[in-house]
Image (tube, rainbow, N blue to C red; front, side, top):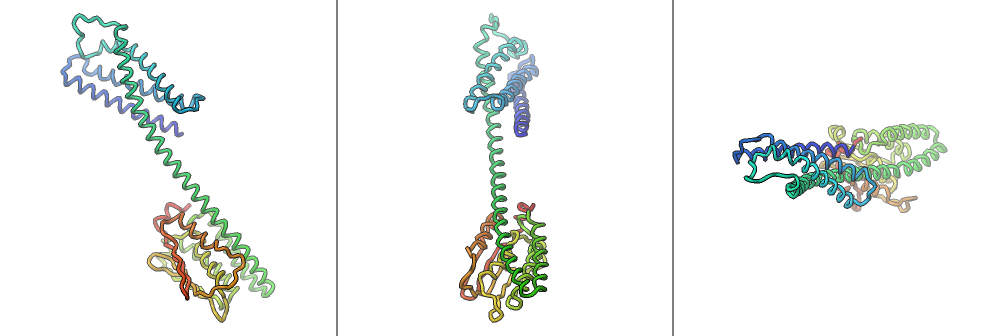
Length: 352
């Protein structure tokens, strides 16, 4: 497919340059007031260039795709030599026709012969072949540059998608381990609570599996996903956990965030802080200056089982894939805050 596109491009531009050369020769002949073959000779010159251009196109394809030569410099040298040889033979064979259609009168007492015309033919072939090679090489280099840039862009996109998928895959095993452990504990203490927890877990997993190929999620969908997770945590902690979400409807419908980002922030807050009825954990999710703020009161646990800080690192790495804006993390004596920018323009480039 790529070779076909390059060949078509070379054909088009070779034809265009041939027409330009024909027009230039016509103007030159007309200015010098040649009376004979004013149109035929420019067409003859243009056809010579077009023929040599077509020959070089097929020579390029043959040397680079039809030979076993590995060295590209040797391939080019072979193309140049064969191309010049064909050009010389073609010019030599058409030299008598050139004399017939030439607009210039023959010199007095000059008898034209094929042998005497060899030096002139060598020079004309070199000029024509050199012009064709320079022109087509520029097109080939430009095509290869654009093709390389496109391949690099595709590779970069593929790498980013792979990185995003890998980071997303790190979320679910950690979440499932905690959820199943909690469900086991609930079933031992309260079967009804365990059933309710299981129902929300099933809804959460169904929604997450349905959207597993999305790189980013509409805010409204992300909030729906979070609601089942939040209900699971409310069953677990009851009044010890207070979570409020305050985001305008317009932003919910038009804004985007990386998939599972809000859920992971809420999970991170619950994981790292004490959650008791005496000291409830209060988590607020709200909009401020185009950013989603997730804030919780700070009451850090002394020991956190299995904590290695991957949650926030995961979110930061995923966010770098989609936006130049950094994830802002702030901690003071009373609160821990994470701020992420709402994505708008990036959404069109990153959704599936």
